Image (cartoon, rainbow, N blue to C red; front, side):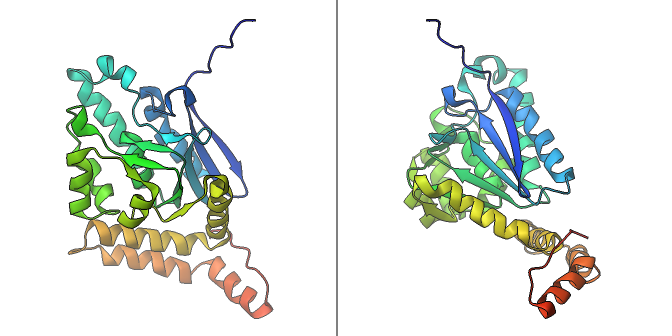
Length: 266
Protein backbone atom coordinates (compact mmCIF):
# COMPACT_ATOMS: atom_id res chain seq x y z
CA UNK A 1 0.00 0.00 0.00
CA UNK A 2 1.52 3.37 -1.00
CA UNK A 3 2.56 5.75 1.77
CA UNK A 4 0.71 9.06 1.79
CA UNK A 5 2.90 12.05 0.98
CA UNK A 6 3.17 14.57 3.87
CA UNK A 7 1.27 17.80 3.36
CA UNK A 8 3.43 20.84 2.56
CA UNK A 9 4.37 23.07 5.51
CA UNK A 10 1.87 25.88 5.95
CA UNK A 11 0.07 28.19 8.33
CA UNK A 12 -3.64 27.73 8.92
CA UNK A 13 -6.18 29.54 11.02
CA UNK A 14 -9.37 28.75 12.87
CA UNK A 15 -11.74 31.29 14.43
CA UNK A 16 -14.08 30.32 17.23
CA UNK A 17 -15.80 32.49 19.82
CA UNK A 18 -13.72 35.59 19.18
CA UNK A 19 -10.43 33.65 19.28
CA UNK A 20 -8.30 33.35 16.14
CA UNK A 21 -5.79 30.50 16.37
CA UNK A 22 -2.86 30.59 13.94
CA UNK A 23 -1.30 27.14 13.59
CA UNK A 24 2.21 26.42 12.31
CA UNK A 25 1.59 23.14 10.51
CA UNK A 26 4.88 21.39 9.76
CA UNK A 27 4.89 18.41 12.15
CA UNK A 28 7.49 16.47 10.14
CA UNK A 29 10.02 19.15 11.21
CA UNK A 30 8.61 19.94 14.66
CA UNK A 31 6.59 22.83 13.19
CA UNK A 32 9.68 24.65 11.97
CA UNK A 33 8.89 27.76 9.94
CA UNK A 34 9.85 27.73 6.28
CA UNK A 35 10.60 30.99 4.48
CA UNK A 36 7.09 30.92 3.00
CA UNK A 37 5.56 30.53 6.47
CA UNK A 38 7.58 33.48 7.83
CA UNK A 39 6.44 35.58 4.88
CA UNK A 40 2.80 34.59 5.37
CA UNK A 41 2.60 35.24 9.13
CA UNK A 42 2.21 39.06 8.94
CA UNK A 43 -0.68 38.59 6.51
CA UNK A 44 -2.43 36.25 8.93
CA UNK A 45 -1.92 38.71 11.79
CA UNK A 46 -3.26 41.62 9.71
CA UNK A 47 -6.30 39.59 8.69
CA UNK A 48 -7.08 38.75 12.33
CA UNK A 49 -6.57 42.37 13.32
CA UNK A 50 -8.96 43.53 10.63
CA UNK A 51 -11.72 41.10 11.64
CA UNK A 52 -14.03 42.73 14.21
CA UNK A 53 -15.17 39.29 15.35
CA UNK A 54 -11.63 38.46 16.53
CA UNK A 55 -10.76 39.62 20.04
CA UNK A 56 -7.70 37.44 20.84
CA UNK A 57 -4.98 35.83 18.69
CA UNK A 58 -3.44 32.51 19.76
CA UNK A 59 -0.28 31.10 18.14
CA UNK A 60 0.51 27.41 18.37
CA UNK A 61 2.08 24.50 16.52
CA UNK A 62 0.22 21.55 15.03
CA UNK A 63 -0.17 18.65 17.45
CA UNK A 64 1.38 18.51 20.90
CA UNK A 65 5.05 17.80 20.15
CA UNK A 66 6.28 21.29 19.41
CA UNK A 67 5.29 24.94 19.34
CA UNK A 68 8.05 25.39 16.77
CA UNK A 69 11.63 24.26 16.38
CA UNK A 70 12.33 27.67 14.80
CA UNK A 71 13.48 28.29 11.26
CA UNK A 72 13.70 25.28 8.96
CA UNK A 73 17.46 24.63 8.93
CA UNK A 74 17.16 22.57 5.74
CA UNK A 75 16.62 25.88 3.91
CA UNK A 76 19.68 27.63 5.37
CA UNK A 77 22.09 26.66 2.58
CA UNK A 78 19.95 28.52 0.07
CA UNK A 79 18.37 31.22 2.22
CA UNK A 80 20.89 32.13 4.92
CA UNK A 81 24.11 32.49 2.99
CA UNK A 82 25.50 35.47 1.12
CA UNK A 83 23.11 38.21 0.08
CA UNK A 84 20.09 36.04 0.81
CA UNK A 85 20.93 35.97 4.53
CA UNK A 86 20.06 39.67 4.91
CA UNK A 87 16.71 39.24 3.12
CA UNK A 88 15.90 36.17 5.25
CA UNK A 89 16.59 38.24 8.38
CA UNK A 90 14.25 40.95 7.08
CA UNK A 91 11.49 38.40 6.50
CA UNK A 92 12.00 37.02 10.01
CA UNK A 93 11.92 40.52 11.46
CA UNK A 94 8.69 41.41 9.66
CA UNK A 95 7.07 38.30 11.15
CA UNK A 96 8.28 39.04 14.68
CA UNK A 97 7.24 42.70 14.40
CA UNK A 98 3.76 41.76 13.18
CA UNK A 99 3.22 39.69 16.32
CA UNK A 100 4.94 42.10 18.73
CA UNK A 101 3.00 45.10 17.39
CA UNK A 102 -0.39 43.41 17.09
CA UNK A 103 -3.09 45.64 18.57
CA UNK A 104 -5.10 42.65 19.82
CA UNK A 105 -3.91 40.41 22.67
CA UNK A 106 -1.63 37.56 21.62
CA UNK A 107 -1.02 34.29 23.45
CA UNK A 108 1.57 31.63 22.60
CA UNK A 109 0.25 28.17 23.46
CA UNK A 110 3.49 26.24 23.86
CA UNK A 111 3.67 22.47 23.67
CA UNK A 112 7.05 20.71 23.62
CA UNK A 113 9.92 22.21 21.66
CA UNK A 114 10.13 26.00 21.47
CA UNK A 115 13.50 26.70 19.88
CA UNK A 116 15.25 29.49 18.01
CA UNK A 117 12.85 31.58 15.97
CA UNK A 118 9.98 29.72 17.61
CA UNK A 119 11.19 30.85 21.03
CA UNK A 120 11.54 34.42 19.74
CA UNK A 121 8.04 34.26 18.27
CA UNK A 122 6.63 33.12 21.62
CA UNK A 123 8.39 35.99 23.38
CA UNK A 124 6.90 38.46 20.89
CA UNK A 125 3.45 37.43 22.15
CA UNK A 126 1.86 39.21 25.11
CA UNK A 127 1.90 36.03 27.18
CA UNK A 128 2.78 32.36 27.07
CA UNK A 129 0.76 29.41 28.39
CA UNK A 130 3.11 26.43 28.56
CA UNK A 131 2.85 22.64 28.86
CA UNK A 132 4.86 20.99 31.60
CA UNK A 133 6.99 19.17 29.01
CA UNK A 134 7.94 22.33 27.09
CA UNK A 135 11.61 23.05 26.36
CA UNK A 136 12.97 26.48 25.39
CA UNK A 137 16.24 27.35 23.67
CA UNK A 138 17.86 29.91 21.38
CA UNK A 139 20.87 27.96 20.01
CA UNK A 140 22.18 30.69 17.67
CA UNK A 141 25.68 30.53 19.19
CA UNK A 142 25.84 26.80 18.44
CA UNK A 143 25.36 27.56 14.72
CA UNK A 144 27.47 30.77 14.60
CA UNK A 145 24.35 32.79 13.77
CA UNK A 146 24.56 36.49 14.60
CA UNK A 147 21.39 37.20 16.56
CA UNK A 148 19.67 40.28 15.17
CA UNK A 149 19.72 43.00 17.89
CA UNK A 150 16.16 44.00 16.92
CA UNK A 151 15.02 40.62 18.24
CA UNK A 152 16.55 41.18 21.64
CA UNK A 153 14.10 43.95 22.54
CA UNK A 154 11.13 41.51 22.83
CA UNK A 155 13.34 39.21 24.92
CA UNK A 156 14.12 42.06 27.32
CA UNK A 157 10.42 42.71 27.85
CA UNK A 158 10.16 39.11 29.12
CA UNK A 159 13.46 38.24 30.82
CA UNK A 160 16.23 40.23 32.50
CA UNK A 161 19.31 41.33 30.59
CA UNK A 162 21.40 38.79 32.46
CA UNK A 163 19.06 35.95 31.53
CA UNK A 164 18.90 37.10 27.89
CA UNK A 165 22.70 36.96 27.80
CA UNK A 166 22.69 33.52 29.41
CA UNK A 167 20.25 32.19 26.81
CA UNK A 168 22.19 33.67 23.89
CA UNK A 169 25.71 32.92 25.17
CA UNK A 170 25.06 29.28 26.15
CA UNK A 171 22.35 28.08 23.76
CA UNK A 172 21.17 26.08 26.76
CA UNK A 173 17.83 24.25 26.93
CA UNK A 174 15.41 25.39 29.62
CA UNK A 175 12.57 23.35 31.09
CA UNK A 176 9.03 24.62 31.62
CA UNK A 177 9.86 25.11 35.31
CA UNK A 178 12.94 27.16 34.33
CA UNK A 179 10.79 29.22 31.95
CA UNK A 180 8.30 29.96 34.71
CA UNK A 181 11.05 31.06 37.08
CA UNK A 182 12.63 33.27 34.38
CA UNK A 183 9.35 34.94 33.48
CA UNK A 184 9.00 33.38 30.02
CA UNK A 185 5.94 31.35 31.01
CA UNK A 186 2.85 32.98 32.49
CA UNK A 187 1.64 29.56 33.59
CA UNK A 188 2.75 25.93 33.33
CA UNK A 189 0.03 23.27 33.15
CA UNK A 190 -0.09 19.55 32.35
CA UNK A 191 0.11 18.94 28.62
CA UNK A 192 -3.34 17.32 28.65
CA UNK A 193 -4.85 20.54 30.04
CA UNK A 194 -2.96 23.14 28.02
CA UNK A 195 -5.52 23.71 25.28
CA UNK A 196 -8.41 24.05 27.75
CA UNK A 197 -6.45 26.36 30.05
CA UNK A 198 -5.27 28.56 27.19
CA UNK A 199 -8.80 28.79 25.83
CA UNK A 200 -10.10 29.71 29.27
CA UNK A 201 -7.79 32.73 29.60
CA UNK A 202 -8.40 33.71 25.95
CA UNK A 203 -12.15 33.65 26.55
CA UNK A 204 -11.74 35.84 29.65
CA UNK A 205 -10.01 38.43 27.48
CA UNK A 206 -12.44 38.03 24.58
CA UNK A 207 -15.37 38.76 26.91
CA UNK A 208 -13.80 41.96 28.26
CA UNK A 209 -13.90 45.42 26.70
CA UNK A 210 -11.56 45.55 23.65
CA UNK A 211 -10.87 49.27 24.07
CA UNK A 212 -9.80 48.79 27.69
CA UNK A 213 -7.47 45.96 26.70
CA UNK A 214 -6.03 48.02 23.83
CA UNK A 215 -5.33 50.94 26.18
CA UNK A 216 -3.59 48.64 28.67
CA UNK A 217 -1.58 46.85 25.99
CA UNK A 218 -0.40 50.10 24.42
CA UNK A 219 0.58 51.48 27.83
CA UNK A 220 2.58 48.43 28.92
CA UNK A 221 4.38 48.16 25.56
CA UNK A 222 5.21 51.87 25.47
CA UNK A 223 6.42 52.00 29.07
CA UNK A 224 8.61 48.93 28.57
CA UNK A 225 10.05 50.18 25.26
CA UNK A 226 10.57 53.81 26.35
CA UNK A 227 10.68 53.86 30.16
CA UNK A 228 12.50 57.20 30.34
CA UNK A 229 10.46 59.07 27.74
CA UNK A 230 7.07 57.41 27.09
CA UNK A 231 4.55 59.14 24.85
CA UNK A 232 2.04 59.81 27.62
CA UNK A 233 -0.14 62.05 25.45
CA UNK A 234 -0.67 59.17 23.03
CA UNK A 235 -1.46 56.76 25.87
CA UNK A 236 -3.90 59.26 27.39
CA UNK A 237 -5.83 59.28 24.11
CA UNK A 238 -6.41 55.52 24.39
CA UNK A 239 -7.76 56.00 27.93
CA UNK A 240 -9.99 58.87 26.84
CA UNK A 241 -11.37 56.74 24.00
CA UNK A 242 -12.55 54.21 26.61
CA UNK A 243 -14.51 56.83 28.57
CA UNK A 244 -16.05 58.21 25.36
CA UNK A 245 -17.10 54.78 24.04
CA UNK A 246 -20.44 53.02 23.78
CA UNK A 247 -18.83 50.14 25.64
CA UNK A 248 -18.27 52.30 28.72
CA UNK A 249 -21.97 53.15 28.78
CA UNK A 250 -22.78 49.46 28.29
CA UNK A 251 -20.45 48.48 31.13
CA UNK A 252 -22.15 50.89 33.51
CA UNK A 253 -25.64 49.73 32.51
CA UNK A 254 -24.70 46.06 32.82
CA UNK A 255 -23.29 46.66 36.31
CA UNK A 256 -26.48 48.41 37.44
CA UNK A 257 -28.67 45.72 35.85
CA UNK A 258 -26.56 42.89 37.33
CA UNK A 259 -25.90 41.21 33.98
CA UNK A 260 -22.89 40.46 31.79
CA UNK A 261 -21.94 43.35 29.51
CA UNK A 262 -22.00 42.92 25.73
CA UNK A 263 -18.98 44.84 24.51
CA UNK A 264 -18.67 45.73 20.84
CA UNK A 265 -15.33 47.48 20.71
CA UNK A 266 -16.71 50.95 20.04
